[in-house]
Image (cartoon, rainbow, N blue to C red):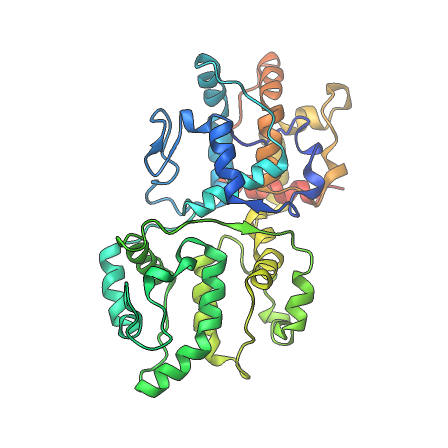
Length: 369
């Protein structure tokens, strides 16, 4: 499918990294790219596609983050390029926009979700009193939309928005029924979602994930009053790394009853902008260490070319502050084969990265002087 572009970053990140964390992602465009760029010839998504490479929708026991995906793609890049050549698949350019759209598509397929269990989810849906108001196909209580009409099930950001806005009504309903507020864990919500998404009535609900640029999210965060509490030790910057939107939905749900006054309602576009401002940049950059990343940069032979002007490789300090897993993927795909050829000519091994090394390398590149 395409790989990443990262590590030695040949000319890599230079081409599009300046907007790395500002590029909006759209899963529908990513879905089309997955097919038009021939990724589907080898990879499948939930059983639909090629059988040569792993199914990207059915990985188990993964706890994937963008850094895990990026490092995995990097490590297997030479093998992928060889397989594409043998099958006559043309390797085209991959812009940073295209990489962002592919990441959005993977997110929409629940690629980054932790595994869940539908059986547990069914039990939890009852145990947490959800089933007392929400029927599956028809309403049980006036104003309680049945699950079959929950379009948010397939749209992670809309799910966050729905749970946030729904909290005030649920507080009143619980109080009327003398039921305590139902705290959730991320695993419990994951199990419930697996159960609900696989019901006959919901299986064909559309799925998607779109996030806009972060601009405007900071203003909303202030105008909605969030900034009044989330300062100092409660500030959200750097606290959302490696969290999925399911994790965030749970945190917001559990937090709602403690908010006084009641939390403000958010429109879908408002929630998308706030999520982009607070979460997207953290999720795709990770929480690496620049100190460790400097060692990675040296040990993986990145410095051999990038600290040597005569090699023709760019000085990456010019783009500091703009590196992310998305920009790494885009850069590797376009420049990786050339990097591989140069490394082979110098008898240097193609480097292997784990997720932490990938995050550390990104942190180092963003701190270059």
